[in-house]
Image (tube, rainbow, N blue to C red; front, side, top):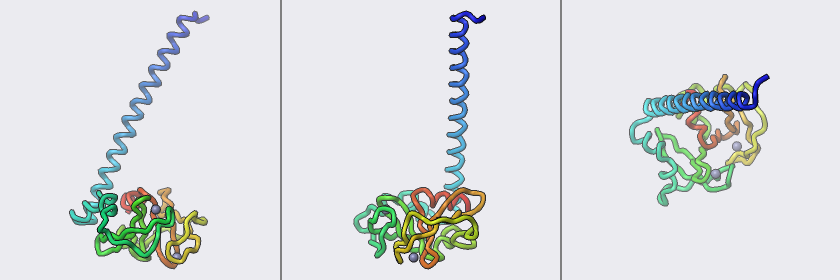
Length: 174
Ligand SMILES: [Zn+2]
Ligand SMILES: [Zn+2]
């Protein structure tokens, strides 16, 4: 039978080894995250010129500017007016509060360089929690592309809504 002291020592050793394991797991994750960000950055600079990359990088600052143009449509998430920015001849509606994006029909395709706004429209879809900012009808939540589990909100008539960070995912996939 194991003495109490030996059992305690074994427990301490166990604790140490799992702490070690979680540390290396954490470092691994951090490295993967860094790699992913670099990949996204590279993709942005391939698709857009330096000025546009700068705007996209500092999007929150850019749209918080008092002089930024106010859009005629409102964010489906918070109800704030979208602000307009221009990237690659696309007029983008951006929400200052949510840092989310609205793309009119055809714009996301142009932005991402993919064949269509939502490449996997035939895949699983369900009712979105958001209404289209233009026609106010419930949007449909679509899987963006297989096998990535990115879901985007879409109005067939008007366009695509991307929540915060989803634009990076689109660029990563495209
Ligand atoms: Zn919003
Ligand atoms: Zn609509």
